[in-house]
Image 1 (cartoon, rainbow, N blue to C red):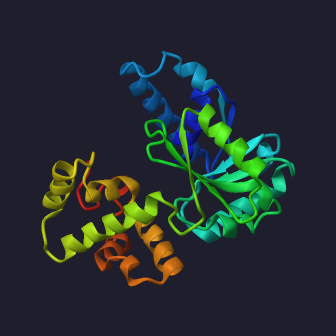
Image 2: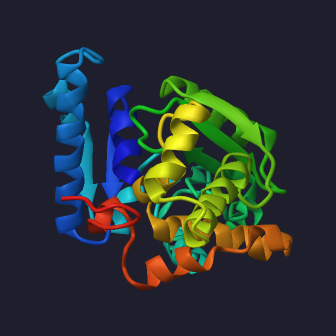
Length: 269
């Protein structure tokens, strides 16, 4: 999602520094943004300014090159230990006044803020996927987040053309506390033979007017991400209703992670 966030920031006129672990990943991200911008231009969603937008994005594999940025959004994998390492590296590289945010979809903002030296200047900024198309961004304050930080982040979200909605710092926040148990229950229904994947998705799409079925959505999100979020909910609430479905865990163990691996509940070319 980092590429999507970078793209939206550049589309809104901001200069962006996009960091990742390898040059190859960054190259793929730039190509992905180029394709996304081309589609948006072809559909008449944005002016034909692709080259101008892309020129605002600089890529790097060095944390030191982030030392002059004014604002940070962390968007690495949904794993606390990985996020901790990245946030601590960022914290060392950034001036003390810079606000840091995390695009985490479920992990405690208070817990993430505590690994940095700036909890009052840290909060959650949870974008929806795909970022260039989805308007919502959840804003989550940690226990130490200052009101000034919240107001600045909200203002930035609005400048990005997003609808900011405040959520409290509970596991899964609002979006995934509601969405992920539904997806998890759809996987239980599939495992127990209540219906095929196609039938389960059809009921929710055509009966409940969802834009896509829960299993198709799980494949889009990534089954590993879905499992990680369910594990955060399970650990955070200690309530059996948040127990990850064994089939979901088995799919992840098999490497069937959805669209990004070519196979999840459906197969993709």
